[in-house]
Amino acid sequence: MSKPLSRILLPSRFQVITSPQNQVVQRLERLRRSKAAREEERHVVVQGMKTLQELGSKGHHRIRTIGVTFDKEKGPVRSPASDVIAAIQPQEDRDGGSMDRLSRGSVDSDKGQMFIAEQYVAVSRKLTTRILGTDSPTAEHEVWAEVAIPDHNALFSVSSSCASIGNSAIHSSQGSAIEKLLVFDQVSDPGNMGLMIRSAKAFSWGAGWQTPGTVDPFNDKVVRASRALCLDFPMRIGGRWTELDRFLKSREMVPLIADMVPNWILQQGVSPSTSTPAAVDPYKLVWWNWPSALPRSRVPERIALIMSSEHHGVNGGGSIEQGDGKKRKEENEDRAAKKRLLGRAIRVSIPMNPAVESMNVAAAATAMMWELNRVLDSQVQNKVPTRDGAELQIFDEDT
Image 1 (cartoon, helix red, strand yellow):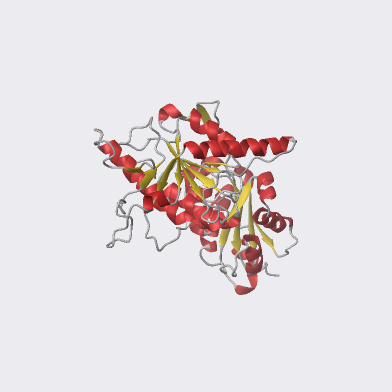
Image 2 (cartoon, one colour):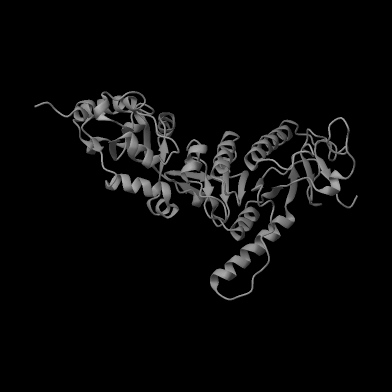
């Protein structure tokens, strides 16, 4: 009697799952659908061979499950699923099939070549689509994994000058302190959230801050849009405005708010050739609400850029509500903190053609982070300050 085809083509450590009622399948579906499940399990599902390779090559991501799409009725497994199997098979041959002999050390010595996980599963294309929740059927030989969500909250501690993540100590004296923070204000679209995280990581911004009303950064659509970079981008999850206010003050960071150019600047005249206000240089950021205590020749080196959803816009937090109770008190304190923070923040805008009402928040964040990087880098290169305000386009409402 011949062995089942699945046993011939798959290493023995792979569990072949065919039922949607299987506990592994149901748990992975809950992770995708439920924020509460992700918070409880501290895991998320990622998709794709390249994503899995990138996570594995970094050596510090804990992988609980690696899955491949497999249909025993259709014959041999093909790439990319076969690539994962090919990487795992030598481990099994060398270690005699013993999972206990696989160690984190083997990951460090073979980064990108081996995939170490607590369990390995092979499921049908239909079950893969259920697990990943994609709008269209997944590829016939897809690869996915269940990865631990790192805890970066210690990095945002106000009381400590040294934060520890995993086994690595991060000291501000070693240059690891956050200097550029991206604050997500009511960004509810997961696609926008994912793209903003991806851009922030690409431009080497230090971390992010998720305020109330913003989508979960480990939502399955955020994970896909960010190419799983949400797992590598330190994020304060559910950080209230009261906490953010204290954090910025403790780190001496200056808040910047991305906003629309106000009418009092736009009304200063329009250039026929560019369709932009004549007083505005269309190739420079527009600044206003600039504090008198700060020099007008340089952008502060430690900044927190607050990006608000284009649907909600910059909102001061709403009015204080009457009533008793701890929750109501915390909400009112948070509204007051947001109002104070937005009140003292510098406003900054990207000049636009007046025919365009607004920019997508992800596009605006990408453009603004890139330009702020350019300005800050030019300040480092040009150590001698320029004449007052020469490089910055600052407007004052009372002049």
